[in-house]
Length: 319
Image (tube, rainbow, N blue to C red; front, side, top):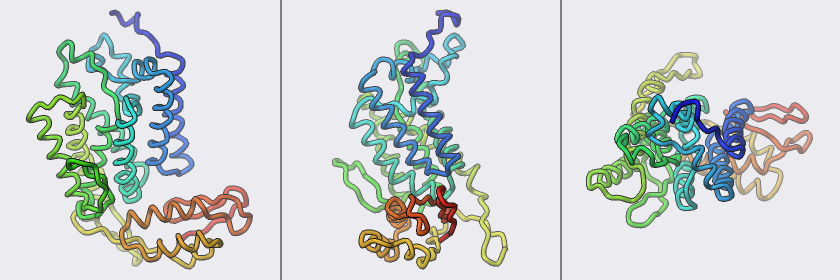
């Protein structure tokens, strides 16, 4: 096959690519949580794949053979394959883990670093799998799914905040959701993946991509986050220590209380005030702002990085 005979993606695949890129740009510009946008994008692409399965998976999935010069124009699938899933259990399992792990981690390091880690570790996971499957016919097998990137986020989270507790689904015989320290959750997943690889258990899953994403997450976090700086109230520069327990962010509850204008919002506000687990508190905060309205014009209110604003009347505040 010559490069001149490269087949362009189908029209529906172009739409899918536009949705993926457009959603990420929108999230970054509008300061919307990247975790939510990635989940929404994955769900939209999954729905499209149910209707146009051959086009979406065939055009957007990555094959190891694409690493060759002959097929290099298809290298874009290293990116698009992270947003394609093969079945309801595949996407449900990935998005469930990503929701709990991704949201908590993004709120600690910010959207920009989070997206960089997600995309790079996803690519590293795919490359790890591909380098071990370059021989025919393995190089023709399509690789899809966000698992490599999700394991990358897990690895980076474990390196950066190992003692933080997260709510996580843990697959030990059966899937159950529990609160667990990040480092313990990652160790469990890493052991499971290592055992599967060691005993060569065939389940049509790219476990080397998981391990590649996990390891690259550790490495990338060491590069991007180890020297992360914060500033104290006194103005002194403090250096982030990745092995110190994470401190709870201080919240001005008087600002939130003014927005609690309904019985439902008052109930959520009390849960925020009394919650001690950071990521659970963050979940209730997100739920609170989904229900809250601007105190001046009653329009929907936005929030990001402890700032509140209304796009309709220009109201601004912080908490």
